[in-house]
Length: 312
Image (cartoon, helix red, strand yellow):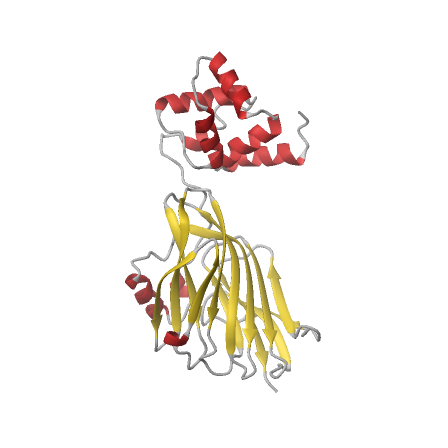
């Protein structure tokens, strides 16, 4: 097969980075072999593996771990014409330790959210570590500013990847504006998740909500889900910020204003941490038709991104 096709380039990348199930799935696609044909070729080499097991392996539903399964993986490398050890090392690297999916560079919530103490207390109540075991690959966020200049609602469509096994939830964070009443904030699970426990801190106006997945993710698995916070309890809003613990990922923020409350000026900005000077300021033009501004960041860095605005 030609080595300069997009499919072969993706296979080469996955064989370097994993995870195993995506590399196997891509190899099957590139070589054009049905699972029944793969099973037959393995049997010719004295390796007995069921089609169901092969299917589970390439879906990420199961992971070959037993000695006989690892021997089958070595044989799969021959059947699929892959470099020796290329699949096997994604399961058992040098030293025999089982790899986790690559975890991007991270920064603690303490440097991104103020007040950090309130957030830590809420996470403690949920018995959830700050690193929930997933990092974001893509996040499209829509913020609605209401007729009283209040943050009325925000919706999120998010794509995450697990960097360890067993992840079955995501903890979403909402910080209302001055005067926010957490007990009046409503959380809605939109797709591919359901609402778990919700906790709020009245003094800081911070709300955290568990979004439960229907299945446990394995390291390297991705998940797409949507959710929303409905607020409207706070005073006039002058900015919206988003903190990023992990590097990488694509982020889109849209802020839309009610026609009865239009700002006179909007800007995007970045911060290294909460309380640090704002940099990367750039004027944003309000769309006349949709009364909205937006920012797009192709590959985020740990830190803060946001949009602020001035009222007339």
